[in-house]
Image (cartoon, rainbow, N blue to C red):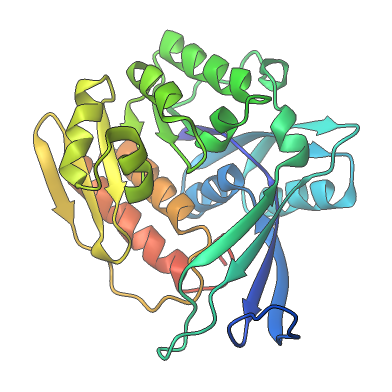
Length: 293
């Protein structure tokens, strides 16, 4: 089952402090460089779950970009990657909260430099990209950035014209008005509660019904430790989270997306797909980094 993913490919720099940071202080921390990029993470998890993903992205003409492409290839992901001659490969600094009494890290703050990823354009989309594809997944970061937005809009329109099913993770920075304007091209919307609130004005998962009425085929709302809610024309259905210990939440949403998509492409109904997404997220938060081991 070929799944096309359009999104960022880059590097994450994880900073896990041993104690709460303080202005002017020298705080001991565990710092690691790991593969990243929301689209690339989802593609890697899709390969982990047995799909045949292809990632469309743009990287810099630099060693981090070459390493990022090689790491994806080693994970079983095909790539259609454009190389930007000027801007560097996308880099995200991820600052984790200090460890809790349970021993893991909780929330994280991200500082993003999309670099070359922000220049993804319709010209970077191969003409035969959707030939034989079972599904298209679009990362909202592509739509959020005006400099890459046309590529996102173009691939959604192309998928709709080709009869290929689509999914979209809104991502936190995407303009809600823009998202509502493309709902009729989205078969599955994958927001978290913050993104749902931005789109509907409410954190009640039931408010996702307004997005279905607005044109989305279905909505899978992630609730963190509370699991997820699947909403379609049959109404909302809650799915419990898989039990786990949180080590690093980075990439949990990307893993959830992959779990849901892989299950749907394989024929699962909505609630079973949401359960597969929750199981994938539980694996992701139980380890360091945003990709499967």
